[in-house]
Length: 123
Image 1 (cartoon, one colour):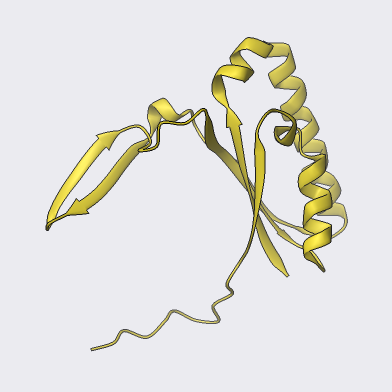
Image 2: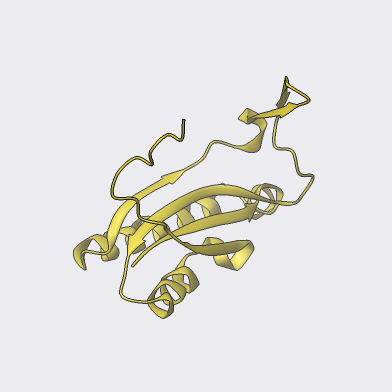
């Protein structure tokens, strides 16, 4: 089963924790990723740039609205993801619980809908 682990964290909390704590957490996440790779459970991971670099696009009444930053005013923001292939939700929960981001924020686990091909266009 494929799951995406969406890593939400508090950017301000990491700033307050300091550079050394943030770098230690990154090293821990990289170590976890290497463990997943060795077990054949790793597909892909990527951190995201800070929310200050985000652009949000919405279409309302046929008009495109483009704004800087994320839409939601929240402390926890999406910071990155891991795409994994494991045998069960329980395994995904165990992995998410070992991610350092879960200690400051949240790791949301979502099953992936696997498409075998591009959906057909209804005409």
